[in-house]
Image (cartoon, rainbow, N blue to C red; front, side, top):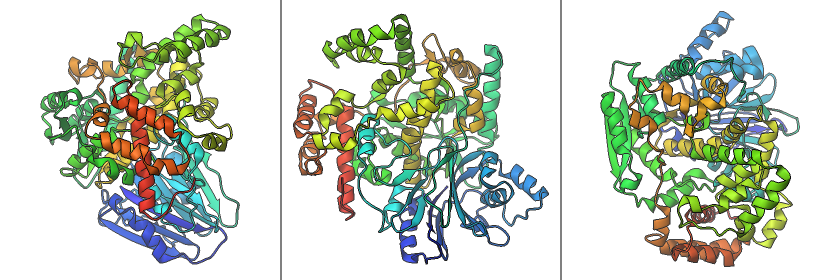
Length: 637
């Protein structure tokens, strides 16, 4: 795995500042500590940091074709590179390495921008074609690998693996994007294509962009989407058998490496299934790793140990203290923009553990989005059934009124916590789902932000992101639609971002077989009742794994990878929270209603309300601002 940077002079021919390019490349040293190199010609510069995994001896980058007219700077793995090498060789292309990187330059020569359709894997790359005078950038279909880009005021186009590399450019504007801030406090992350900075973008998953010299700024173009095209009718038994076969194949192609390889094993369904498939494909013991928590409310290590014992893996466990809040400032440096998923803390630790044993690790990420594993899918479908019984003209006034006046009772049993349900029922499916996944409701954000901030939004609302994706969705079936929304927002913006930054902080490559695009396409074609049935998420997946995993692993209650935020803010982080949220840093931005910030802190610390998730998002936002000031870049709103 690697870190990449690139610069193109869109006006044509100006010299690239080598020292500036070197600074950009150096910010990503952690992504590729094995090697680093720069390439510069008039108007074009590439920088690369390499984590050597395949063709260690000859896979250096940037890499060119035979006559040097096409160069690529690449981060990822293309798992079908051997088949593509054979096909391209038969078409007359000559290869000088055994790396998957070289496939990209010859595929571009052969198929142009449509080369991305031929790649099976995770990738983000920039390619310079000197003859055509174009820079082509692309990102894999599901967004496993990141890619940021910007067209600068001085006429340069630049891209990188992490936002910090672009921030090293002196001409990059530093203004914060108000719409991105609205998104952040709704979702807990900033969904593609926005970043925290105006004019800086994430290339969305399944998109490509071609920037020609002398042309106006290019726009990203979608080249792939999840089809959700239902297959011909099949039985449960046939579907479960085929799913196991397809998963095994997706795992198998991800076992190619010239370095130690293993897997994360949390004890959940997805990681356990990946380990079960790995164990059946190799005579060597699978290297597995997991972390244990001293607080048993968060500890799944016993379940991981059960699977490890079943498959005789070379299993390693480390116990970490649940009070691992010392990473707060480290996380702000890793993510480069506000990011509020507190499970980033244990994810960082498990990556740290894995890197002691392996350089490549397989994970079970993506199973919940693919196969409807989240509890929120079950709740959303239950709400949708109720909506179906009541005409839409009645739902909003009836349930909207109940939601407005029913007391919020975080302390009560779930059956009595009806306020959120009433509010969700008054909305349509997309509004209800947005309301359910939001860190802060519309009403909370209305109170949180200052009048000036609201005016600056010019009518924009965070739900507009989901609305835009829903309008492009290939399906309007309710369960499939909200899965699609998660695949476009939560999966790349939260889950895959978390794993990429945490793993690359330790120079660890993570491969994700459940997000193999061919497997995702096939699973999307399964009817919804095979994914969620009788309140059981991942129904057909669990059936397919019954011959491989114990019943109590498959059917136990899903346990999150969490940390005790509520207790931290009433205990060891009590004063840090007050200093950060009620101090000068947030006040000086002019973004927030200071009275409401104090109310949230006081109500949480007194035990009156549980504001742990919103408070964490504010704490991480404040940590981001401090990091900005500490880098001397200032902050501009």
